[in-house]
Every structure is written in C-alpha cells, then in structure tokens.
Image (cartoon, rainbow over the protein chains, first blue to last red):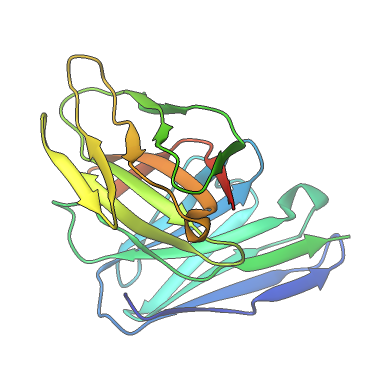
Length: 113
Length: 114
C-alpha cells in the first residue's frame, strides 16, 4: 500500500470558517487527488495535481482550493465552510497514468455546523 | 461523459453464498475498469482491475471480466465470508489530458451473516 496519511482525521467546524485538510505521501507519486464521499454519490473528484504547483479542477470544485508546494504534500482548503461541505474527504495518489491505479488515504470526516 | 451504474444495496448473504454485484458503464474508447473495496472506517483499497476487453481481474477469490459487448464488469465470488462485509465500488478510468481520472459508481454495501 502507498504510504498516505491525512490530517486531521476528524474535524468539526462552524459555517464561515476556513478549513485546511492535509494529505501527505511517502511514495514519491506524481499525481494526487482530493475526493469527497457522500451517500448516494460514491466518490466525486474535487481537485487534482499532476506535479508540484500544477493543479486542476475536478467535477465539484466550487468552494474549494488546493495547493501543492512539495511532491509529498497536497492541501485542500475550504475557503468559507458551509454545511453542504459536510462529508468524508479522501486523498489519493497515483504514480502511473497508464494503469490509472489510484491509492487512497484513510479519509477525513468533516462536519460543518 | 463517462458514467458507472452499480446495483443498489444493501446485499445481504449468508456465509458461503455466491456473490454477484452488477456494474455497467458508459464511456468513449477503451477505459480501464476497477473494483475498489471499503471496509468500515477505512479508505478505499484496490480489489482488482482489467485494462482491456476480455481481461479478467482477480484477487482474494473475487473475479470480474471486462465485457465490451455488454459494457459490463460484474464482480463475482464463489463463496463469501463474513470478513467480506464492506462497500464495493466499481470505477472507470479516464484521462483529463494531464492526469488519470476515476469515475465511481455509487457503491454497493455487502453484508455477510453466519
């Protein structure tokens, strides 16, 4: 398994506050992804990165921003958290676009009150 | 665009029963297909994959065959165990132009009882 950690694992915050989630990998994978998981929707892609300082939007990117200043770290920021952003957030990495295999972190459960 | 449709759960089976979870997809080209499994409180783990038509992915007694003619990738296991209780996700691989991209189904919860 790819060495992927996420922090924090659980967070409760209030509407309107900024929140940053961190993903850290030790596999030197080039590609990193942020997904959210909601009942009835499976996993949906928020943002992804294809290299240091190279990022792009996924299908549900509104209200989220990302940054990647080092290969091993990928940060997801909720600029002003809303209750609709209550979800479980997963980071994933991939070192090879040909096989498309992605490896997932343990997830962060975020509750916005 | 790409999409994946999975059978809705939950699926409840007795131990040693035969399992089938249906998955069909819509895509252009010849995408890779995946099954991921999520155990309670954990992230997703790759269970198996197939990269071209007629390929069979297999792992831990689970199998799935890439059927291009029926656009399907059904997951099967001949004899399930209580430890197989989890949520199973079918996914389709694509490419954004700068990275690979997975499109997931909504997941099927499997519960296996003694």
